[in-house]
Amino acid sequence: MGLLPGKMQYRRGQPRAVVPGLLFLTLAFALLVPLPAEAAAALEVTGEGVTAPVELTLAELEAMEQYQHVYSAINTYPTKQWYIARGVKLRHLLDLAGIKDEATLIRFYSRDGYDVTFTVKELLEDKRYYFPGLMENHPSDGSIPGSPEGAVEVEPIVALASAEGSTDPAALNDKDIPLLVLGQRAVTEQTSTLFVKHLNKIEVLTTKPEQWDVPRINVPAGSALPPGTGLVLSNKKSDVDKIHYTTDGSTPTVNSPIFNWSASRWWPLRGDLEEVNAPIRITKDMIKRGEDGREYIVIKARTIGPGKEDSEVATFIFTLDPAAPDPTREPGGPVTGLSLDRTRLELPVGGTYQLEAMVEPYNAREKGVTWRSSDTRVATVDNRGLVTVVGPGTAVITAETVDGSFTATCVVNGPAGEGEDDQVALGEEIPPPEERRAEANPGAGEEIAPSAEEVGEPEEEETAVPAVPEGREQYLAEKKDLEDSVPEEGGDYQGTSSQVQVFELFLAKPLSLPVERRELELQTAIVFILFLLSGAVKKYLEYAKES
Figure (cartoon, rainbow, N blue to C red):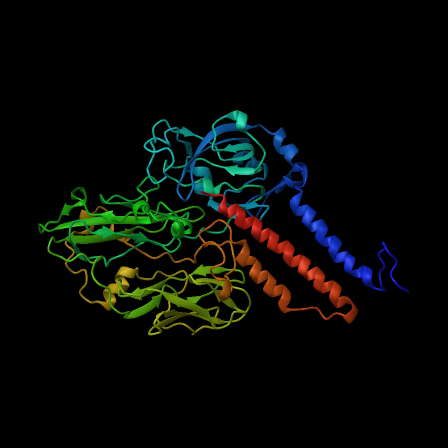
């Protein structure tokens, strides 16, 4: 029978194709049309660190006592910002859930998968403030400190109304609610990237906090330097983890100057990076004189950031010699060695660790390395050395200099005995980079004159590498051919790379289906992938909002 004009005819079995199409339209509609506020704003307070987990609706949160205040904040670009917010005190919600005395960490989850972790100490015990003088000295540049005068203590809240960039109560809106909002511990602290939008879960943990990695410096400690030398501090991540330093011998705190004002996620976009994250120049007020009459300087640095304990203090001492060559301007030579900060890792499935590759000499002409895993079914590694365990078994992570002349390896979840040459287990200390350099260059640093007492710190506070794995990351390691497709891990969101692994798992184990169902299942799979992709795109757009 022929087709009738103006009418649709289906062959037998054809209606099956309509099902995934309807499903796709339903999902698309769900993405475009937000759920009612009441259904979307439910908040859960749970975890091993509370005795009475609770679930709260938006109406229940609105019925609680409300706290309203203006908050000062800085993002990681860095740019200064105002916020006005009204909501429920975080302390009240945690008390309602029965927070335990042994609680150590509090993790906040967004509906889109983003999460931020704080230690209980930094969030609830350390005082946080609104700094009305934040924008003094410069109205927007967060690398120029504002005035700490007139600071007002404020409470961390779950906001039910807020307005970014405003101090006017009339601007309050419900765009990002529930929204975690908190004050600054110092007028330079970068907090706005920690404001969790569309908050739906608060998890209280009792696990021991990890520790940030110890900062490094760009020239060997103990070197003789001429006045005016520019010294550069660095750490593994350089994002929300900030390097605070002093030049007077005192211990760095959150109130000390910051070296890495701009986070690594922004570096490719900044043509003025060396002006913002400016080298520390040796000036007269930094110079001290030892008992032997020689002049020297002392730089102390530590990494401070959310969700982990502060790093140990790194102490760098340099003698001054106007006739000495500036090591930062010395021409680099060929690579002479490569090592990793860990030669063995024991991590659970889903666990991550940021490996650090150290290329010798410090001024090698080419310090780049490439990374690979011997078994990507067990552990993956991205182009920055972030290892992610994705399955059971053993894998060997290899770093190789770009010229192929040196390699270094790390065994992941291997049997006892593997990777034990020069092995350092998690939980043990390893020598800092300066000591490792000294072992490779005997005699370096012997001319240091000042004692520990002259430096102003007990000897036991000298640099020690933290004996814990790097913190929980937001994403699984990217596949090699997609390594550069998403923003730097330092960014807030890594949804795209996570989805790569999800797609791989989903497509790697196809179901055994009857022939007549394969078309339907394939179309459903495509819809599922599109749905996941939409989530990744949404996260990337959210990442791009911070400026």
